[in-house]
Image 1 (cartoon, one colour):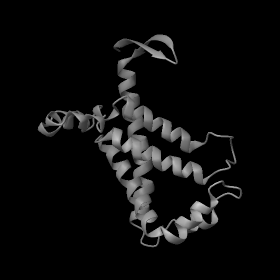
Image 2 (cartoon, one colour):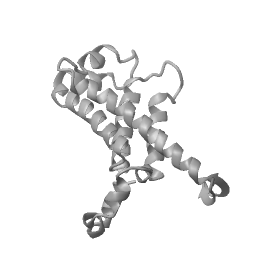
Image 3 (cartoon, one colour):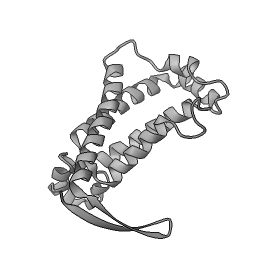
Length: 176
């Protein structure tokens, strides 16, 4: 296995360590695929079920004492026409992007936004003060985007070499 050395500054401290480049590659691929499937499956089951709606969750599953209780009730009564497709298609498309490794940074950003909404809907947390699985997913998505997981057997490496991205290099911020 190839080992590499990394040096970085974190919170004002220099950090230097060795890591397995092969191990990082396998880990990024595995995490990207697992997160991709988690999002894709959660979304596609909603897209394919014509009876699915977020209304029941928004009206009846929000914990008592949630600081945003009125927001969820308003979403259920006035914004459901937008919330349902955003939720179902957002999960599906984020998952698909992660599975094929295309626009991974963009998908990771929106996946983290979805997780932030889910986290806020679960306040106050039953099993923790601040951290729950939604926060873990959001941070994992951040890592996938920051480490360029879409380049590991994904389409982002190919997309980065296209004429469009060469002409507009800022598009690279969406790839990764």
